[in-house]
Amino acid sequence: MALTVIDSEDITIDATAGGVKLTEAKRKADKVVRARCTVETAQVRSQVDPAVTLLAGSIGEIWNIGDKFIITGKNDLENFRAIRTGSTSGKLVVSYEGLG
Image (tube, rainbow, N blue to C red; front, side, top):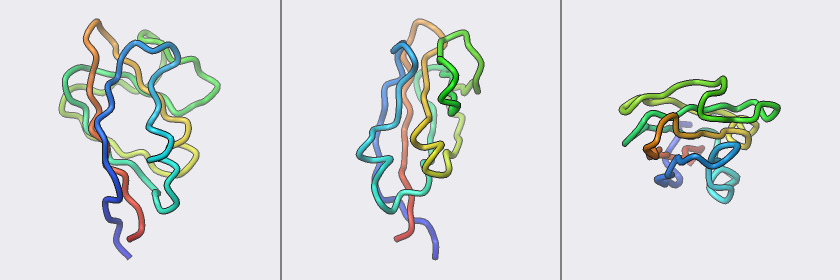
């Protein structure tokens, strides 16, 4: 069975200490198995390791405007966090996918 989009959202990625998470109600929906993400507005840094304190200059993946990535699995969806790298907040466009 193919994956279908169940829900979507735009998330502002700012300088929140520890990073911004995916919206709990959306990422925890019963059928959600992955989130397809596109970075808009400004560069962001992301991390899925809950043991790492995410800061603008810390370790993690750097994503530039226009980059696309997928977060797969309940654990990574739960632990994903992102933070802006500069003085401008980014926008992450997220489509939550699952078995329809």
